[in-house]
Amino acid sequence: MPFREEVLLARLRDFALAESSHLKSIDFARNNFSATQEERQLAIASNYHQLGYIHQLKEDYRKSSEYYNCALEIQVEYKDFWAQAKVYHHLGTLAYVQGEYDQARKYYQKSLDIKEGELNDLQGQACTLHQFGMLFQDQGDFEEAERYYQKAIFIKRKFGDTTYVAETYGGLGTLYHDLENYEKAREFYQNSLDILIRYGDMPSQAFIYSQLALLAEDLNELEQAKDHYLRSLQVCIDFGDQERADFVICSLARLHQTTQDARLLAAVAQCLNTTPAKVQQLFAAANP
Image (cartoon, rainbow, N blue to C red; front, side, top):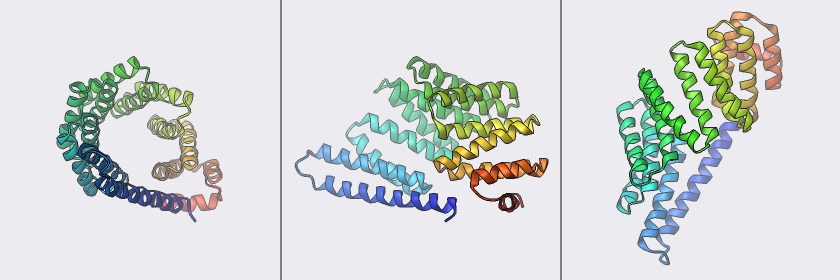
């Protein structure tokens, strides 16, 4: 069975099992009369939250939003501020990925207000500040984006949260890349990658390698672009990241169209455990 189908089926099985488990937990909580009404309701809300996240991962955003709002209704009633902040953050992300930027900003702001007010949760604030940075960057407000990214980094450094600093360095790399400040972008990408390598975060390395490859392409450093894409592809295969693997294969197909480098075909074939001829067919399908 092709790699893509194996990963998809495995994920669907995992989602179905997780959804079934949380629905059973909701039924149990409703009938658990040894617990107080508040305990039962908050247990139900917690499972609604998890169901929302499952449907978010499945990209069923309508169903995800329904579950998140079911959770939120209970959490507001019982003043569960920790859970509210998380759900508002997730609702912000749902709106963000659908391009509903104004709505995303409102949800992120609600999450941030709770984290700054009732919770005084600095680490949680950093997470939402990072999302604000991404939001403003996508809207082309690079000055605001950088301001929020730098706020997030300041908090993350304060708590020694090095792995999340790497994430925001990556965000700043994409920001400067968008601004065509390539040297600054490379600096932030490399800072991010150094941390990710130090802590063994291989899946996140795949993203940064692909970004470094795009940067090298923009600078016409095609041999370096090839090396970075191949590193990214190998990590994607090792960790089952099919979505990014597809992106990298399309990028490698584009690069091969420019270079006609037979060594690139051989290297991709080795990664995919196939033949150069099959890779050439794959490239033709990726860039018709």
